[in-house]
Image (tube, rainbow, N blue to C red; front, top):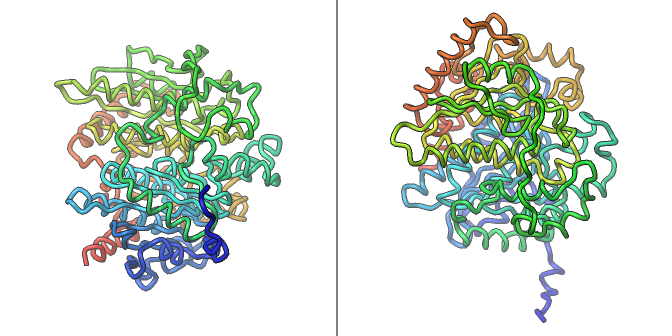
Length: 568
């Protein structure tokens, strides 16, 4: 029997008591910490004061260089006490740029691991579209670094890791959690707002931790290490994770959609298991469920709508094929087109209106991976992948959270990133609604993003009524503020001023495209494919557009400041 170190237990130090800077310092070797882009650099969000919100000098994120047992690392620590750890323009730019610089050093022969201390509610709604893009850039930068040096996530506090940043957690090399922590794409209160208390009672704390809690995530293979709330024990776990180095290709959770497929085959959405039953069925290892075959493709009627109309129009003469009833694929010699569409018969009832849910994430990830594999031996240029985007967000459901929708979407993000970095031009064409985690899964990893200039095109981090409630405003107040704060706006023209839009396309009828509309958009897609073949495969170019120079000046300052300080 192992002897119990009572002295250590009696002097345990609660990690929950620390702020962001102290948490980073507690995990690094003594005397090795160097803060980059710190509070004295005054890199504040420019979007908060116009909304009556007091900014913070470091925008709620501490970036620290240092070592762990002699291994070089960079730590990004999110301050849960500022805006609930929400990610905005500046904080997101700090994290993504730190990851990109770590990747550059690793390629140059100085391996630099990343440690992400994830205490966050996700996108900061006061900076909605800038925060949403920031999460996409963090995902991409983490995937750029992951083959070169470990990217380690730590979720240790009671705020937990929610929203788009939970997708980042799903991309990490290793994920360390405590019992107090929680991980989920949709917070319980958000699910209750969107789907009602019968779907998820946000006042039921036992249910919350049974679904999202660190112990449950570890017991079902969605986290690697479960550690007590103790700074020394967390540091020990982190030291081991850094020393273990990179994970071989193909073995990350986000690279294993077959595990998700086997878990979905093990479920009956009409009679789902309780959260407490899942650990016994799936276990702590992220492995296929024994004896469960992959589910057979389900047939069904393809629903009409903008996604269906545009994928059909853009591949004239080619009938789209239903990968599943809610995911369509159409192939041309030059490109593969993908669209998520409504499926009124979806057994996962929270994904019937075109939301990206568990089966949609799986179908997209597997299809993209198949295209990459199919084109791997081609002598000619690899085909483009065109995401036709019209989706109302991700699925807001208790069953989705139990299974781990954040991890399912991480598989889709990983697949799109892998396609883009292996030579496939990835293009997104926003023809309708593009909200929240749905857009993060299907669209925001594109090298080029096109959008229709139409009142029916809406891009944002959350549905407007929910965003108003969470920011303690009325819908009218939100609309009024959006006139002065472009990231808040749901209007595609305001979104296009933020630097991510590579073309805003005028059409006559966005719902039922005319021949002239198809010609306009088809030509724009062809031009975007040509551009994507000649630009870097990462997303750094989004900061170099004319619109970004105007409205993302703070992001550009972060990039320049962090790079300058990094090299000192």
